[in-house]
Amino acid sequence: MSRRCDLTDKKANNAFAVSHSHRRTKRLQHANLQDKRVWWPTGKRFVKLRISAKAIKTLEKKGLEAMAREAGINLNNY
Image: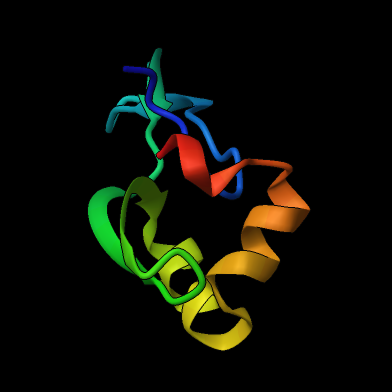
C-alpha cells in the first residue's frame, strides 16, 4: 500500500536533515496518514480510507461525497 492520501493525494516531500555543523543529508517528510472508517450515508455503510489528518478536518466540513467527487474516486470500491 502506497503512502498516499486517498482523497487529497498527499505524499512524501523531499527535504534535508540539517545537523548542527550544517551538514545536510536527504530525508523524507511523510504525510500524516491515518486509517479511518468513515460513515457513508448514501451507501448506508462504513468506508475504510487512508487519509491525511488535514483531509479528516476538511471531510467534516465538506462531507464524504463532495470530497470523493473532487478526488474522482468511486466509493463503491472501498
